[in-house]
Image: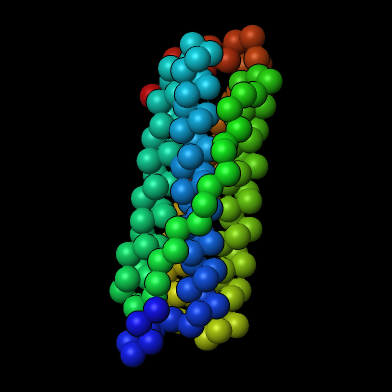
Length: 163
Ligand SMILES: [Fe+2]
Ligand SMILES: [Fe+2]
């Protein structure tokens, strides 16, 4: 960290590095889901998760840029291997919702930390992620809902509506 001009404390810096890891982790996981759906002959879901993976990359890079702006230091966390097989399309979609719920909890903790550290800049920056997570959880919930209504046997019909 460039101490002379750092506008971020080391605790907040570390926590944001951990969040970069979670965003890239989600990206990696969604690319794995895209690959799995492709293998299942469900190209609509595959495309949907490819796009999700790209979005998560952007979320991670947005934090990298923020740390650059405030004179922080970026350390990219190592990533575990993402899950590569699922029992069913429904189980795969459930894992998407669970992942988004987990990221939402992590974002809320970051907002709490920004408040505790009186880091108004980080607090303001994180608000974008708060609304993004609201949208993502709503969209994952909607997708899971529709998939459950179609049922595993007819999930291919839902696939054709996705792109
Ligand atoms: Fe994200
Ligand atoms: Fe997300």
